[in-house]
Image (cartoon, rainbow, N blue to C red; front, side, top):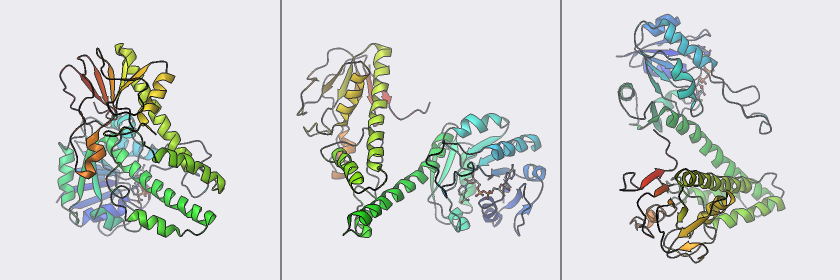
Length: 412
Ligand SMILES: NC(=O)c1ccc[n+]([C@@H]2O[C@H](COP(=O)([O-])OP(=O)(O)OC[C@H]3O[C@@H](n4cnc5c(N)ncnc54)[C@H](O)[C@@H]3O)[C@@H](O)[C@H]2O)c1
């Protein structure tokens, strides 16, 4: 039996504390009077000093009018409030006579824990960021049957206190949950972007509902149920690897044409424009990263793969040429290597000397679902002194004579 303390026993914290209390000795502190049959509600001093573990479940409130129940998309973006978390940390520092295992549950945006909270906590304490995917109405059930448990540590490893927290959860879980271990920042991102995936999914199906209402002869359920059964691409892990943008003969042009449909039927918003705009800015961000590398090292830029995907010749809708557009817009030349590409403009067969390469093609990722998975082999000799920017983060970083940069991995 472990001694556990909760700071903040509101809608989330009280139920979670009571779940722990079925197996452990649990105390709780709140600035608001709370009652519980199984959790001892007491002073902050007693919670801190009588507990080995301290869970912080205080609010991280949005500003007035930022909960989504009234229109807010026209308003200035604002972060959550952090005063209660800071107050809880200060209370741990002030009261604790010895080292504590501090676990923050409250939802915060990526980067907050590292930048704002950890610097405040006395160094003698250990810290884990451990957000919950729990819904109102089923807190206690969700707590012991989570889809996953996120354990966030400074370097993303399951060492020390994070391993102990894993063992503590094993004493109460009913569903043998999956543990996702990452840096504080990665766990903040898993929690908050998990919610964004749900918001985006609901936004998309409701958009189809809007089209059904405007166009006629469409039952939205026929359409969305077809997607719900589409386990090859839509409902499964495919397209879950960040890398090059959506491309090809169909996807970009379909979305571009759908902008017209949204306008034609006066849908009132244009998600296609938003998606395509994001795609363009993402290509520009990647281009500027390549430009920066090229300028720092005085090397030319080569895009390795011009066709919109490996093993085909088609350059229609190619994300490589979109990235190339933004490289040229930034004032640098760009060439391509691709033995198959049907558009030979600026395509070379060999590259003399070192260069910054964009590893645009990854045939393993593109064709994994067919069972055809050999890696992309270099389309030309890559001279020593080159830099390969791998947006798929699959190339080994210890290639002799070549620096491989994994675009999208900023872990140090
Ligand atoms: N409610 C959920 O379903 C849910 C799910 C996942 C994550 N979260 C996150 O958990 C956090 C808490 O959410 P909640 O729904 O329980 O909020 P809540 O407002 O119901 O509960 C927070 C409790 O903390 C207390 N409190 C406020 N300031 C305090 C302080 N300085 N010291 C001690 N206690 C203090 C409040 O009196 C309240 O009882 C938020 O960050 C929220 O986003 C909530």
